[in-house]
Amino acid sequence: MIFGLFENFGIYDCVLFLTLTYVAYYYYKYFTRENPLPGPFPFPLVGNFPQILWFIGNIEMFFNCCYKKYGDIYEIYTINIRTIVLCQRKYLDNILSKNTHEMKIPKCKILTKELGSEGKGLTLNNDYKSWMFNRHFFNQAILSPKFTNEAIEQTNKLFNELESYWSKLFLKEEIIKENKNILNFSEWFQYYTNDITIKLLSGKRSYSMATYFNTLSDEKADYPEDAVKLSQTFHKPITEYSIFFVVPPFIRHNIPFFKNKANSILQTLDNVNQTLDAIIKSRRQEIEDTSLNEPLQNDMLTSMIIKNTLRDNNYIETGEAMRSLTDAEIRANMQEAINSAALKIGNMLSFIVYYIAHNPDVKKKLLEEIDSIFQGDKIRPITKDDFYSLSYCEAIVKEVARIFPVTHLITRYIDNPSETAEYHWPAGTLFVINSKVIQNNDDDWEEPNKFNPDRWMVENFEPNKNSFLMFGGGSRFCPGRKLSMIELVCLTALIFRKYEVDLVDMNAPIKVTSDPGLVRCLSLLVEIRPRNCYVGADY
Ligand code: HEM
Image (cartoon, rainbow, N blue to C red; front, side, top):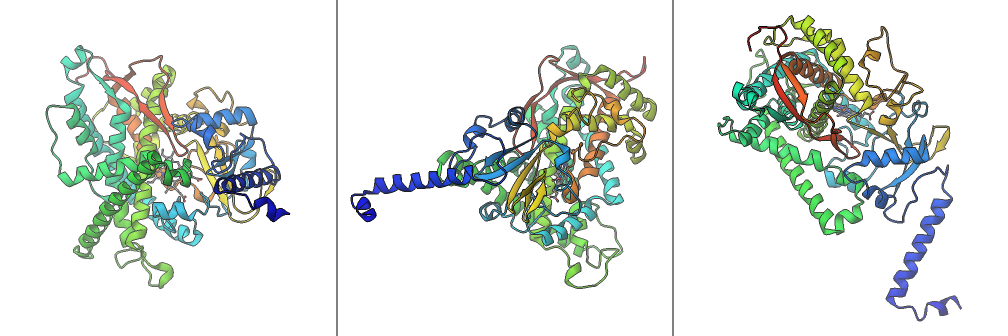
């Protein structure tokens, strides 16, 4: 009798039958899931993609709306993976513990193979041993005192270069008189951070600022041709990467618009890989050609190449456990560092300037601190001691990171069953931590919506555990935190020491776009002129 039912089935009936069976199975699984939580209603194959699509370009808004509607813990379906969103610090004890070694993304062969990141680098590396190994090299290269000194030296050098462009374009007397001293701060600092990141990490110059200057000026800056290609190659994947995280593979592979976008990113990544391979090869050669007693450059690439070789001061021959990194591993680490650093620091600087401009009392205190440290000297290079003394400036950076974080989400994926937020979760659960909501919670922060750097100045002040996640937490804590603080504090001081920076439109909200990885400033127009700290001073 059952077989009789199927006798007259055509191909369309079969497709319809299979679709209905799949949909029934999908919703059976959905309605019988473990620990059901509130959240937007999902659809077969695409999960909550239709709802997320509504917020494309401003994913932060999607998470805000869900938080308001569903509360401190809810679930969404991204790329058809059930994702538990945590918006309370009390839920994070287990998941951000230093003793756990959770991954950041689901084990997804297509993703890691497509992006070529399988078992390499840090963020997308799901192999714990390989992650540990790479993380050790990463930390050693970027957290050393030599690297700190190099970061401060390069910050000064590149800031001088930036000023040389600004003086030609915006700071001449006649330009200021005609009110043409307006610049797009977010663009300039995106190029600045590109330049400094690539210099510190690879030892090479990218000349992004020079390239940008040339688009604005009749007078042209000189730079080597190959350097330009490097900066252009790095710019694209960082900004468009998120298509691999929000668009399901089926759509990415078959719908022409998404397919073309994904292919173009893969092509760019391929160019980045080739560029990095060439840089690594030539640096290896330079190191080989340098005698053992001659000093080497202090960039991250050089440190990663020489670690566990005869060049390394701490070298002990112990075999595989202390092997050095392969070119492919170095490349993945470099790519990751460049992707992480330039955009986050660049965008945060724009947010800092925006908040300072809107808070005159904060600006006044900042200038008092700067003047007391530099004593009116607007030219001498900033030093490591200055960096450690700029405590109010550091408080501003932290307060901006708290109230308006550049990374608003942090992910964790468990490959063993675990207890989190008072529920037992099976292996294979993905969690998203909404750090923006957590950092603006009034249980942990007095008047959380008030921009108040002074809260960081109270003696012995420490935020409650897991209530401030600027650099994440647990063993996956951001390894670039020291470099970031150096850049953010030093640049804020260098800018405000010498320049008056006013927003062109004080009434406009800050223009941003956000994807799951980053909140990005689209544009920040400011009017700039030399700051007259002391009456009668010469500029
Ligand atoms: C304002 C600047 C920055 C901010 C706000 C920031 C924030 C973060 C956050 C929130 C995480 C996730 C941590 C977690 O999952 O618990 C992270 C991870 C990471 N960051 Fe940063 N970061 C910044 C700059 C940098 C820089 C300058 C570098 C490198 C040069 C860097 C390299 C990385 C890497 C490699 C990871 C992945 C670590 C891992 O999975 O083991 N970041 N960062």
